[in-house]
Amino acid sequence: MDMKETYIKSAALLESAKDELLLSGVTGSHYEFLWLKFTASLIHNDVCREFHNLTVNPTIGASRLLSLGSIILKLFEANRWYSQVGNRKLLELAKSRGMVSLIEDKLKEMKSIRPSRMEKYAGIRNKLSVHYDMQIAETLQELGAIQSDAFFEDIEMMVRYSQEWLQALGSIGKLEVPENTV
Image (cartoon, rainbow, N blue to C red; front, side):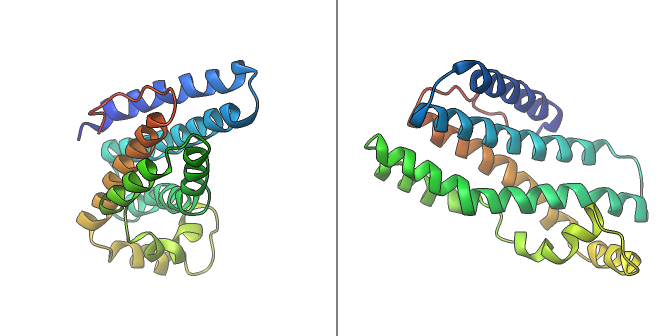
């Protein structure tokens, strides 16, 4: 996966989605579609940016572990948004357009690429990204014990999931998501 290229493409998609949302002047389900497109593009860009920054980060040891805090927060919150808001809204929009079975099938298919270990990071997400308590050294040690291959796999899976989600949204409306951006 070429993260620099993926990140640049995600930035262009975010900018386009932002402009389309702010300049559209539409309401109702079309506005909701544009809002979903913008929010999912923002999440995709957030995760791509953090992953790209991680791949070019030259630090080692505690400094490198500390840099993982923001990506853990992004992964956790992205997963939460898809679970609690995004997928539900996507299905509601699909239902309003008579395409619910298409989206249900797509979401089932996408389960295999959705990171399943996000809850594993719940205990350390706030400590490394926004809260610094007296146990920060222990938290860094806990993070260091996480298998790096599994962690990078989770990041890659979230990048793929967010792109597939945007493509699912695009299948029920007008949306162009470049293929092979991950």
